[in-house]
Length: 471
Ligand SMILES: NC(=O)c1ccc[n+]([C@@H]2O[C@H](COP(=O)([O-])OP(=O)(O)OC[C@H]3O[C@@H](n4cnc5c(N)ncnc54)[C@H](O)[C@@H]3O)[C@@H](O)[C@H]2O)c1
Image 1 (cartoon, rainbow, N blue to C red):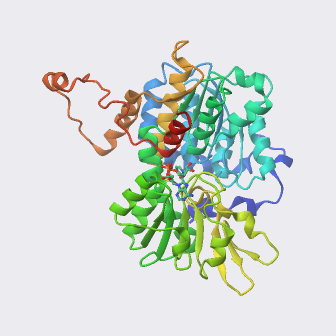
Image 2: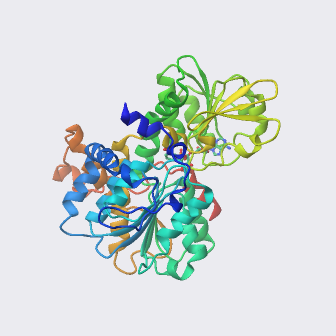
Image 3: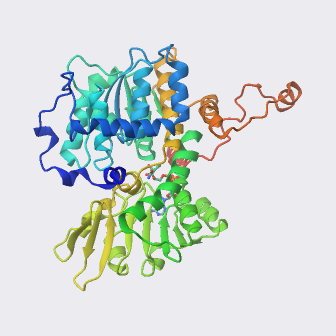
């Protein structure tokens, strides 16, 4: 019971005093952190221990590289979701020799008790659930600029730490050795910077690593969309009509889960290839306007902006649930709902009724922010895959000989993707077949990999977009 309360209860309700106004200290006298309540640390530590069990790959990497300390002298500014799983990544990086300072990349997704556990362990963490926008930038600033601290690596999810450092601390930014970026949005920003000639450091696009897109975006969202909707609305899925905007990796995961529970699923897409995939997977591809009056649930997963507008929401039926699975809160035009004619009523933490003058109400989740990280927990196993990929990307950029990477955006070498996957296979007692010498020669492959050429991947739309832009 207690576990549930911790996950779903918004800690922003629990305490009206801003953590920035509190003076907190660990028993060891450590004060270089800002979290909701340091006294929650023991509970957070247990959460981290549960996550460790379900994160075999990153734990294996921690063990294998602990003696070599490949991140010795790395000073990493981290800006990611702060939850039990990322805590396992953070502690792995430290175990591999890095110093870190960490902020949250989303104002609603921090697990306060986990942030407390990290601070208690002596890591400078600046994050709590329910930060204001101003708090959000203040926290990142505290991670970038600190006494006796010149960061040399950035681990970003959404590009905000990179953005702040570039804009406000440009001299410091130029000293960075590498950026590892996880999200579609952040990667897109990096490609834009690179194109504009403003990227002065090498960056690793982890988002388009096979081990990220094919596992995190797809499998993680497949499991967590149901969890988020259930926990926040207690909804029954069978027979419900759902429209999912965007049939990329995230959209595909959501569709599989909802279809599996008997929902009638519609897709909206701008890309004919994804639209064709959706059609051949048995979904109706429609314009949002064509289905908006009938659907019970609207989910955005595009990474785009204003996909669901006020005009759409005006047409929704009473009780329609509206939520976003994309990285940023731009997909649903939530601001357009803040007009005097509409009444907002808080139902639960992260659940609002928005009520029209005629009594019609829609159920808006997490105010249009990323719903699975705001309203549910995420499966640790897939995060282990992403976390191992991020750790390897940091190790690669930090240890690369001069000249291997220029000031540009790179994908992680294929062999490392394969290594990350192999770290996770023992969990399933999966037995790989080894190439014979004859087969290796016939296929023109090294027996140790890589087993596929670099172009053997479904490139995500952010990369395609960049390819077009650079034509
Ligand atoms: N919730 C999570 O846990 C989680 C996990 C991974 C990624 N994400 C985020 O989800 C978003 C989607 O990620 P992805 O990997 O599926 O990206 P993707 O590029 O594979 O898919 C996005 C799809 O949306 C389509 N699209 C763009 N604009 C549209 C519009 N106006 N209407 C309809 N379709 C449109 C694109 O054609 C594309 O097929 C990103 O913002 C990403 O950062 C969320």
